[in-house]
Length: 265
Image (cartoon, rainbow, N blue to C red; front, top):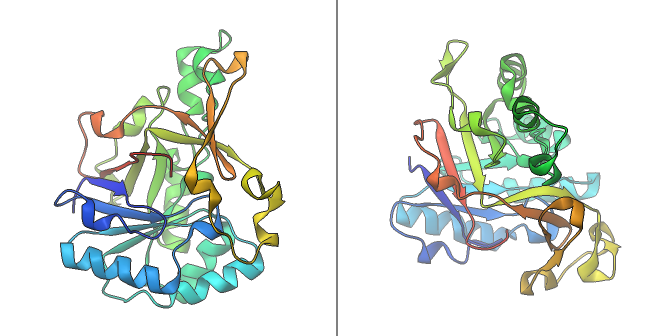
């Protein structure tokens, strides 16, 4: 399995342009309207299969109605597809595990528990250990990993490449006698926060729009505030901060995967 994935767009239309041997990430962690449709998902699965690379499907949080619609999308995934699903909704985790127990499920960045605000890096009130604590999360607890593995089949965790999360590069060789969970380390854009109101559709909730033309894909906005130390970048409902290129973290244990974005996801 390759150690690197690259984001190939919401629908995976850039899979054909990826370097040989590099996995493809598609979908979205923050908006249901940036998930691929059934036809696009099948095309992405076929394209990844043709190139002999794995596919990573990023999913957002869901409302009940949205989750029901998404379930029909997952029904189309072939059982033999080399595919991981990053889950960012507890209800979706339960539904996918119960309905599709053959899917490889990993816990997404929205559920990881990491704190990514750039104020952490410049705060004079935090010690080095205090900053490091902010880079930890559910994935840091052996007890939590064991529970999620046994109850929901979680086989991996998605985290951000943070300056105060150096220990994330030290992926465990094994976990309580089981094979080590995969750690998907994302960068160089970390998710700081997100909202339900999307500025690109006049501040409406994405749930109030049955179909979206994805105007957020045409650009982004830089948000600046002196206390931040650096600006946040907003695309759609999500706000990001630039961190580090995860591919430059070394050494990279076999259980680590780097998810790289040429642009904002």
